[in-house]
Image (cartoon, rainbow, N blue to C red; front, side):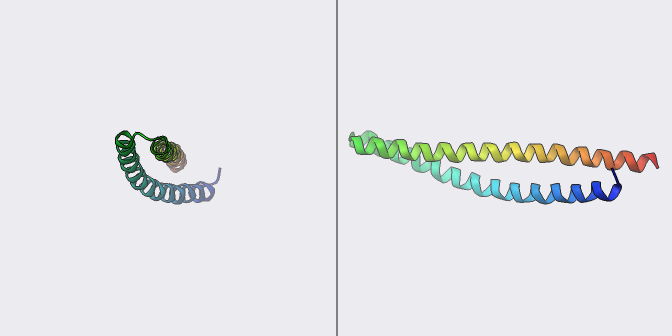
Length: 99
């Protein structure tokens, strides 16, 4: 693969990595809020002991769990992009060493 193509791919991966990391930071902040809210709603439901309060607690927990799954997905994407970035850097380095 040509050096310029490898460099373009490396730039693309670096940009994607930057965007995903920024999204992950926002997602983790939202997750903290949703986890805290789910716990507060759960405690209110325990005190209220009503079916509606239980439904609200389950809904809040589902939202927090969905956000946690999204954060996990973003972390996986970051790891994959980091591996791809490392592989591209290795290829560029190997090609430069071969010259």
